[in-house]
Image 1 (cartoon, rainbow, N blue to C red):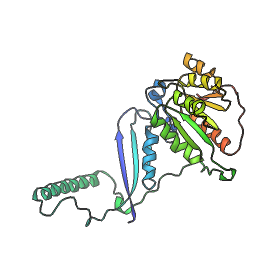
Image 2 (cartoon, rainbow, N blue to C red; image 1 turned 180 degrees about the vertical axis):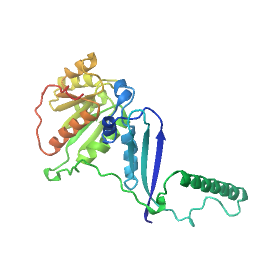
Image 3 (cartoon, one colour; image 1 turned 30 degrees about the vertical axis):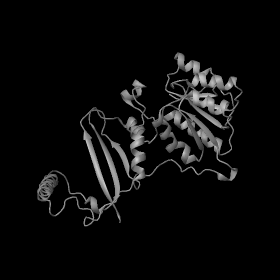
Image 4 (cartoon, rainbow, N blue to C red; image 1 turned 120 degrees about the horizontal axis):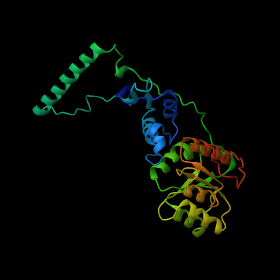
Length: 290
């Protein structure tokens, strides 16, 4: 069946979004936060839009965008859904012998017809959703094609207790680049995989604030146990706090912020690793990402 387009718009009359922040939210990067969300830090992860867009993209390239005319002008959330049109002769929701159901269906149809007529009197005519097929906005980022000529895929360990964060990074970073990623739910599991089971990884991406064992303690134990590979710390701890400083000094090669800029740097590190580039081990922690 051919694809048809459905445009859903949700409007609010809230505080609005300035152009700079709107660009960040529509940029598609995970962990992107603006306004109060950015200031509150641990109040949210900045993954809501990313997850929604990932789900929509899986449905025939559907998309989600945010619009606003500025501060004090509210905002619009515009979703373009591309779906296959159902054969109404095959998918009937009301049986012919269901009199009550038929009456309810007729009432709903009458209400929808009246609402559509009222809409036509207040808005300019628009093309029927059943005859349009809106295309999602083009992704400005170049497609990354992993180099498979180098043999087995690069193997990384991602120590992260938040499964949503892990799945999101898998979708936007690990799978597109072509790395083989193993997930550890906390620092203790990461230490066991390497020192206990002797598994090999080309890179460890280590969260800090995890139950059972933090990234700081896990890194210390890995270094004490003889692990010399590269460890990149990723954390939401602000620069200068005690937890962040302890993480910096635990033996990690660098610490990135858990935000859109930190994710961009992590993407560069992974590209270099897969493409055969070499990062200098023991480089000082990078605090210039805010």
